[in-house]
Length: 369
Image 1 (cartoon, rainbow, N blue to C red):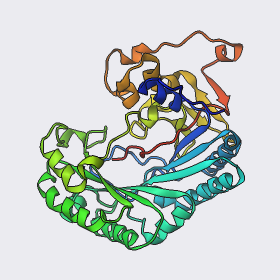
Image 2 (cartoon, rainbow, N blue to C red):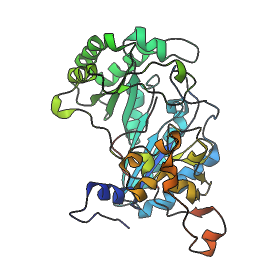
Image 3 (cartoon, rainbow, N blue to C red):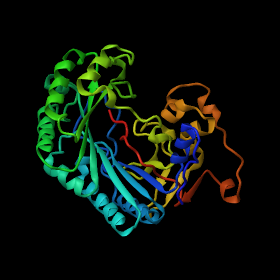
């Protein structure tokens, strides 16, 4: 049943209501956790391969179980590199498209975080037909810089292929939105004015394209110790923003992270449920499992840790609940387990639940390196 925030409530309470709405389902799906790149700042270990068939069936069955109760379904494709498992992406996306067709009042949309190496105009057009119409592609500057940090697994450069793919999408008619995420580091800052001017002149006359400037930060990868990062207060960043944005349309990040929303879940390739696409190695990021029949086996105390910002009314923890796990201190102690209210709850930590709020409408995609 849909829930709406009453008029006059605070912005925080409006977000709280949105984050717990049971008529919205947001799934972040890993069709594979393998990648054809080895970016120098990546935090992933690529230990898991393609999504198992029983997990694919579980995702489709979950959609079928929930579609009658939903007004909005969003699928976000992540990895690894999701285009390496394109048949899985197309199978699930086609199933979601059919679910929308068969369910009056159900809105469905989908997005993908991809390195862009396998995303040309033909691929974009096909995925758009299946509802995947929003893509995020990262660039680390011109070829000489990009190919130093965003390298293929075999050590070869990637810039020219990605740039060619992006221009093919620009020259085509795919019904897509392209977010070019340009990474900023101390090493590439000097070349950014010229590069961003090239990006602006090449893509930004097309309203399907926009640019998001992002400082590379330490996310727990093996290269963190040797990585130089920019200070977020560096005065040079604002000048770069003005090259690619009109002042009134600067990109504004979400104030509430998807990981803080009760109705957003990550489904990894092995069927584990999680909350945060960055903290993949954090044990507390496994909050349950998706079963082949589409039911969710959820560890409630672990899930509540990701939602504690709502209970404590701490905007820092709703903006980034992962902070509670990466910073030692009292924040994790703000949440304690409540007494069990039923025999089922008293019998153990986990339970199987079909109607758990499992998604929300999102305007931005999961964080990627």
